[in-house]
Picture 1 (tube, helix red, strand yellow):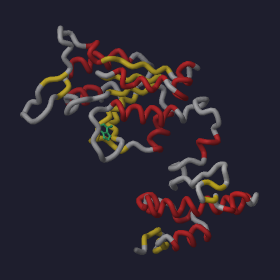
Picture 2 (picture 1 turned 90 degrees about the horizontal axis):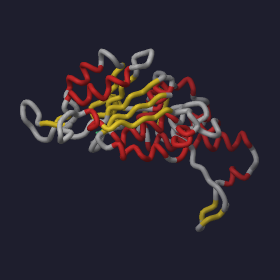
Picture 3 (picture 1 turned 90 degrees about the vertical axis):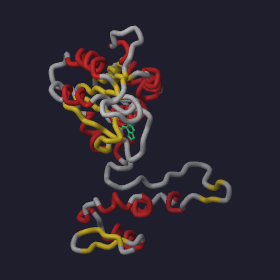
Picture 4 (picture 1 turned 30 degrees about the vertical axis):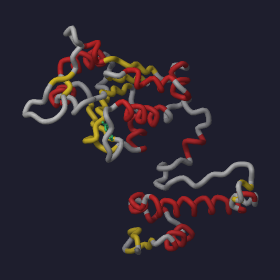
Length: 258
Ligand code: 6GU
């Protein structure tokens, strides 16, 4: 997969040289290039921002360097996806990461200050499939940290990036439930024993215990995820646990009872 990141702080993307992503780059699975937006300016001061028309606080990123930086990234056979990190974007998710992992080329345009001149987005939509993307409902200083998160979420789905692909299967959000808690040795630590069932060797019982924990956790921490579950995919044991967590099936919908 080809990935291009445009930023005024290319050093912010240095962590993409580490760990599994760094290894995938060395192995040739990821062709990831980081570009300094200031290299596409033409003035002595390498200016990338200016004051906003209409007034208001802060600065806005000028359009010209953006077009100069993005145009050379259009050499491929199809319209690349242009991801524009912004708290005003669509909320990034595992299912979006899966969609993006199927692409040939992704381009990330990291804004800073109050954002990029909106005409860049309009112009880019003629050449790219533009996707404004947010990590969630909080404000970061710029898109770089969001790109680190999105690149990691996408790259780990590519064949060969993760050593053991089994670890992709059971994870949080794949089946709409949070992960079950995990334990390792020692079996007793600071007065806490691990749940006894995990030592039983009874794989059906262990699977049931873990499923119960997933349901309880999700009910407690992420009721928004539970309401999106398909009640058809819940068995009797699931419904029993959910009833204990304050949920009932009413008219085919999983609803909170408190
Ligand atoms: Cl993608 N960018 C910025 N600047 N702030 C954010 C964000 C993105 N997602 C959440 N907050």
